[in-house]
Image 1 (cartoon, rainbow, N blue to C red):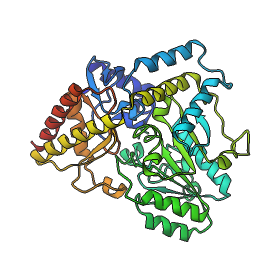
Image 2 (cartoon, rainbow, N blue to C red):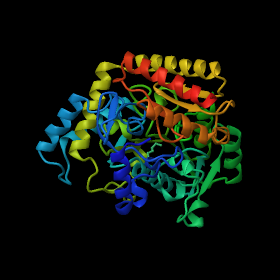
Image 3 (cartoon, rainbow, N blue to C red):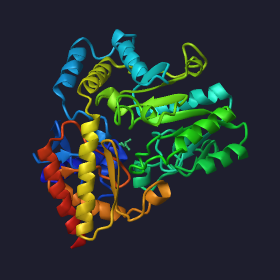
Image 4 (cartoon, rainbow, N blue to C red):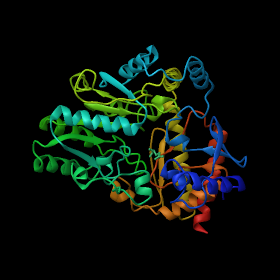
Length: 429
Ligand code: HOZ
């Protein structure tokens, strides 16, 4: 249960902020209890307003692959800040970050930096529509591409958590420009291309779904989407906001060897500050202003402080190469969770890839939105609250990814493993 100060702050917050928060999943609605107000973080831990520390497996929903307040990243951001927080003008550092992105994700031949993943997703879809002269966009149920109007259809993440996957306020005519299909169903995609022949501008997909919890692409699924898009003159957009620089140095596209036409990045690429990017084929991106007629802009786009944090994070990832170790630790943690769950008779499915994982409270394999929705969110809430009591912070929602960072030590993971065992046991009691 949240401490006295967090409870007091939440009361105050509700008088000033909608629902007391600035992003709905923070409200703890699906896990129950009062949101915990954080005051600081370092390495693998965060601390709340009551001075309690937690081993963090949410890590701000993914950006902090190196942990909180990594000194080199802080130093780089601080150095940039001292020179001026924003110019609304071109800087050399943003060019260097774009070059780093091009080198790591070669399909991004031209890059545009934005301030949030939502903005980058929205812009990628806009440019795809302009390039093809078509309106329809295929997305997959349970995938989340930010709170873009036309993509808030069967949306995952907070929209699923709060039971509003089809948001109010989206004109039905806009929602009708989106065709929603089951994730991992290449046949459904082929049928959709047949049905809406010559009308599909783009297919947008999280190459590894992470916003319905973690669900892996079935073998051949992404390659089939590539093939369908190419054959039908549509663009393939990979939303790698979560997977970018999370599973390897670059995008998941490097691991699955499928080259999208456009890619969206966010989270890690901004080193924990508000920065995202979209980019792709030169002939497509040349449509974006000032080169072309697709308008997209931002006062804080390519903000120097965020750029500095992003560049330093990428530099550290190139140097430290943490990916193999992170994956091994995640697999170990997941094996422990499965073992503990089975020992106390609690049914779980644990999906992992690299340093991402989700504990689903269902015995069914989770491969798409329908199977993810079988998970028992109320059980997850009890699990979450038990972990919180024991000083371990998981994402406060069932349909999200949890993350390991390079800052988690063996001791952290040992403590977390014990706490998870107890949390599972409490569900069995
Ligand atoms: N996009 C984040 C991962 N699902 C959630 C963050 C939020 O909605 O606040």
